[in-house]
Image (cartoon, rainbow, N blue to C red; front, side, top):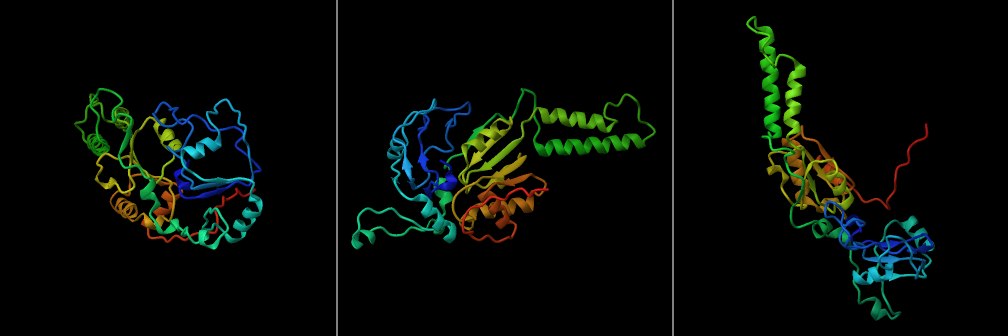
Length: 299
């Protein structure tokens, strides 16, 4: 259900598939997100397995894989030599594919090839509306914006420096030391949650869940949302997603502006989001043959 797999045809090398079934899609967590899934539907375009289990048994199982695929209108094949197919993919890299029924040439030509790399897939999977979790304030006391807190801290530091160099400074001042300045700064920060914007390029629910559990004010926005208009922003996150990152032009431009105007604000990207950050900074990307993971070097 990862939106980053949108339009993929999944080939399972493991022989026996889904003897544990599929959990309940309607079950929600404490944040109102699907408890067991990364999105609200199957994102892959097809499933190809070697041996399918017609019996399923697990404490969380609610339906069979077959019923789940039918519900979301996703085709699947079994009794396929997936290891032989994987060997070909290993040599050639990820390839375009389609599932057809029938052996005639006319049937074969009836389905056109679709290249997802020529489409902005992010625009198809990203949410259309803003989703927020967590109140900006933790208490009923007056909260300051991040800019106001920073200005306050600088004023207090300057005031402390001036007082320490003046002969008229008295012991009654309660802002004389650096520790006291930091203490007052921390008090303001405690009255205001950190505001994080997450740009949904195909974000996984577990990422949203993780950020929510950090007790922040989280704002998840569509892929083309201009986050540069936000005033009180403590961090920006660009999510994972499907397809060619060069197609996500609006997000790249917004990030480029953000880098130029808010260089002191933390900025993080993951997967596709990391590639978007690279493009915004002036780098170039290219398509690799297949996914791979770097192994930690033994010391």
